[in-house]
Image 1 (spheres, rainbow, N blue to C red):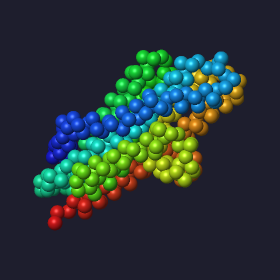
Image 2 (cartoon, rainbow, N blue to C red):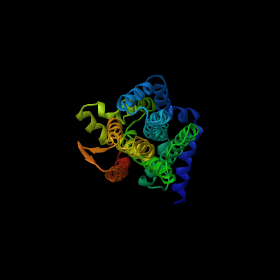
Image 3 (cartoon, helix red, strand yellow):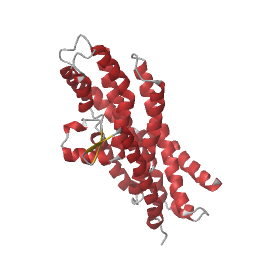
Image 4 (cartoon, rainbow, N blue to C red):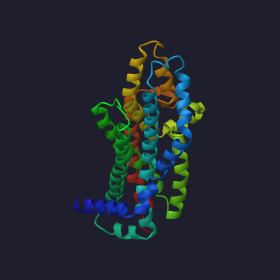
Length: 303
């Protein structure tokens, strides 16, 4: 166990000592933020105003602004929970490219312990970085007014951050162990950064896509985790807005917002409960861990 912990610590230190790697791992989140400020916020606000016609005197404009800001925060966190775990796994490719994995495989550690040390270190790194983003988001939004988030929901948000870090790291581990060079890994990261915002609905709500694309996007656990984030962070504010409306619209405004911004879980075209999403992500995580333990020794078998 001491050797396993030592290798895990070594992988953690390598990631956090590389400042460029840390910065680039947050690049997609920064892109989402810039896109939001330049293009997306006004579009989302217009959609909200269109849905609230006839209710203008009942809904506080500050609540609408907070609602849209929360949607931004969920998009940023959702993107971070994809790109950060992948970038944390870059240590695997660098070790392989520099033949360091030969030295590691010569240690008394078994292959499954080696792959799990990479997995644990990357999960911890991803959770720390994503939790920092979430904390900054909460602090900034709390300074703008009441967020209407119960304390238990705040704790649940950090638990979701950990779950998202686990599932994304396990999934990308199965991909990155096949790369032999950092250039190939970097090229894939570029494509991943461009696509992940669409897959989780950070740029455009999934409801705007065709059913086939929605089914494809909902297959990935990151999309389900993002849905859980929306419900955890936004439901308190939506309940407050619904109370202000007082049933005048029979709940139509809240229903339209939830429909537009994908608050429901879906898998293979069928709706599932939020608890069902959690079980799906956990099952996906378990399958990926078993697969990485089985695949890693074959991929890194010395010749």
